[in-house]
Length: 157
Image: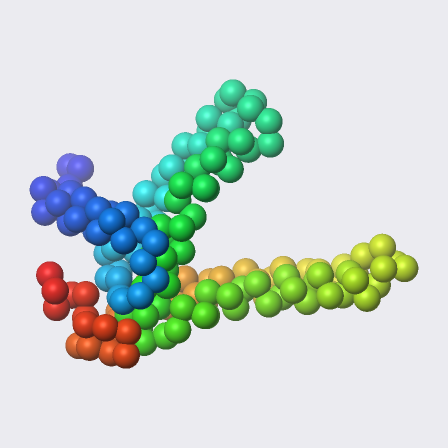
């Protein structure tokens, strides 16, 4: 069975709300809003990767074009989702810190052509771990009631 009509209706409402607020970084977003949008994003991403592979359109041109359309709504919804758990959206920058370390190490080690491989591996693993932490936060239940970022999105439903 594909699912009942309330699940389909919930998905349409959640994705519709996320897309209607595609550039809104203030306020809060429910888990359903984020997870349905993220699921749609992953389905579109996989489809575009398949099209790129089958057509051979160069270095992922369909993915690049697709990312242009979905990056901002996913980022805005993630920011509002962090607000729902009473966290600042600035936490979304955290996974970029290890990558910044690699850039600085590369600039310092200009004579060696690249930073030590161990540093690159450590920074890459750190970025993956920090991304996983942010994703866990995005999937957790938000704070009950109002918080400093606005009213509870579940109370509005």
